[in-house]
Length: 392
Ligand code: F3S
Image (tube, rainbow, N blue to C red):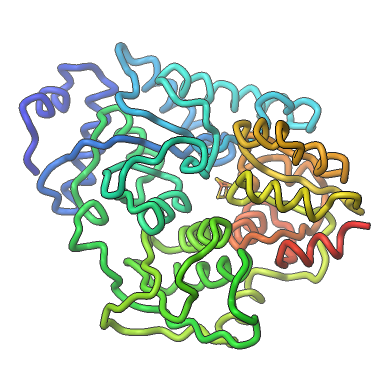
């Protein structure tokens, strides 16, 4: 891989340990992907923020990087949700020892210079660059959305590679950074009959979960409506990113490649693999974190009603503040919903601390991870049904 003189010097450790490590990571990835060079980026999005995902090893690594002389992020850098509500963790019964570690992680990122985002929906909170811009986003749901809906170019960066990209303002010129790689490798033809016109975020979550498992490369869809709502596109992207390695989809693909059918049978098999129970003991919304539009819709749906069981809603602080100003937050809270800010819905001790054996959610990605991480049974249903069944 070709490196400039400046890159060679940084790789040799002449510009500090953090940059040396960062370039070593990028060069190793570049060699694996036969990349010819590194290219500049305009935005890095870093994952690996919850202590539940990175643990002690990750925390030590972050401390080492952030304490290295002169280490700073060189490009606009947002971060994924962490594992707790940063302001209200005490009242939400987050264990003190977990919170201490989580705050150390946040302090390390702050030292490196992050935007105060704590969101997996960064495209809602900040101005999105023009189409074709190269970025380096680690959160798989956001990366799939960036490539497929926003027209940005990002590889599915890992927590470590995105950190390296943020430190260097560069990424590896490979995979989805290259135009010729951004074409469907296989198509999925949607021929589901039982679910009406095939709309809503649950249906797209089921489709995405199936597609992500089947196709590791760019996914072409056929037989879908021409435009998806923000909630549908977000749910599809998140579910694609849950399993497998696909980083992009193309709606209404014309590519002449092998086609996989997605019929009622595949739909039922996918949902029954994700949903083990008819009812959940608690309601969880917000994987990915809820957008302002979703908070608005939720407030309309629960106005004048009351949740019959614990309901937790995840969103970023930025969206919470906006929802508060518009009056959505107070309606959801009056209905008994607890709005948790800046946390991931799945990689948080909050789910285990509910001490329930099952939850009901509208997210395919959330269904997969909450079962995997917390061992709870899942009831996977659409948002409207969840509200009808769980409020009075
Ligand atoms: Fe976001 Fe966590 Fe789900 S990062 S997409 S809420 S797993």
